[in-house]
Image (cartoon, rainbow, N blue to C red; front, side, top):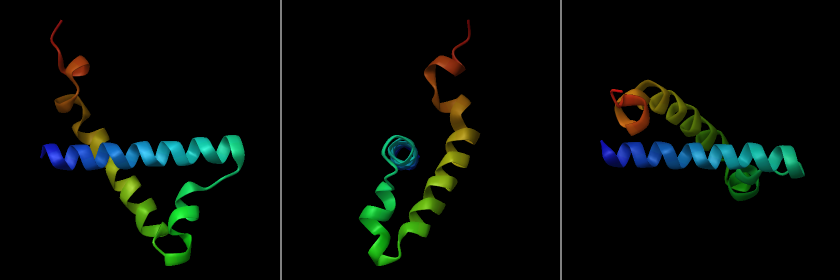
Length: 69
């Protein structure tokens, strides 16, 4: 499950960078890289699924959130 967590987290970073670049420079990194191949929608779906996965498993994976004070 550690590999799944790493992949999901990496996709969330890519999604976050894409949103930041879009807001700052009106640039879509995913479209720039994958636009010509038609893979952009697949990348967006994977980022969305990753967000759901990280959101659902965050309490178990996060050391700060799961620590008992």
